[in-house]
Image (cartoon, rainbow, N blue to C red; front, top):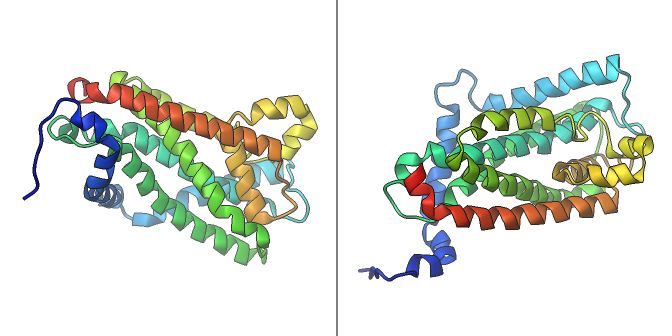
Length: 277
């Protein structure tokens, strides 16, 4: 029989060890969220394909055909947009799900002790399932356009980790703030809608630099999704979509700061979640 010790400060000292001890709860929450997301939907998991597909078609028609925006080199414009929609869709979904995860599990949080960090982490992992489905759509796009990736594809997992870090870091901040201030549930959709237009989805960061100069491009890279999207386009589409190392390092630094400060703020507010929620 496992011994239960009630000791002042014990939960705090063993918090990170408890994350491993409660891994089964993590699996349960992630699997439950996957089932709930597509329960009683007419097309099920196809929604993970429909959303980025429609956005890619819309951006290709209006930005490429109407506005005349072009992809670099011989890269088809639809592939450029799809390579950007792949991480953006994951980021937007994961951040939104993580921000609402504590409020959505209010009954569980107010009754049982477990490391609350499990909840937003599970929400981000759940969104990774949609990402894998969308990655399959990207593969079909590349087959359709007869565009084969090269050795740059080997670096894709690194940018996937960077996308995960960006979504989790911001998600922790919004998750904790959403418990304290429920107004954030209305701010987050606006943030997602606005964010896609200030990220290199319908244009490249190289085009921004050419138009507005190096100084502005470095400030532009403070948006963590700049480095993520540039990395995905570079990994999937190769040399025609150049990767600026300085901008990438700036985005990496921002993601690290978001993760560290997000965990710090989440842990600071965690002890009050059960009372406030």
